[in-house]
Length: 68
Image (cartoon, rainbow, N blue to C red; front, side, top):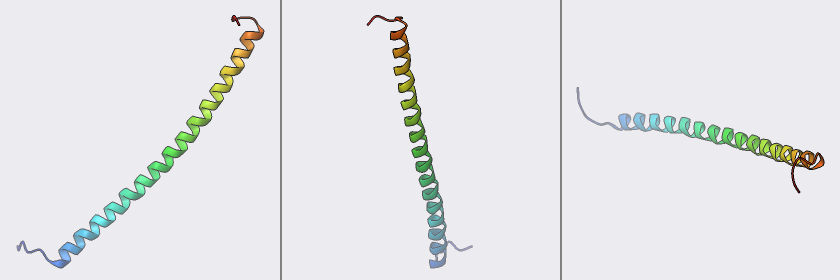
């Protein structure tokens, strides 16, 4: 076998590299999108917990369970 590098071999190698890069780019974009959804969900849960905490404090004050 010859170890000669041909333009065709270079072309095929670059083509495969480009396909692999495209797959990685797509995976990266999907991952970023999913992370954005997780961040939105976290923010929503955080707001709900803050509201629950405020309500609990109000209940404790009304029942005089805490000093003002």
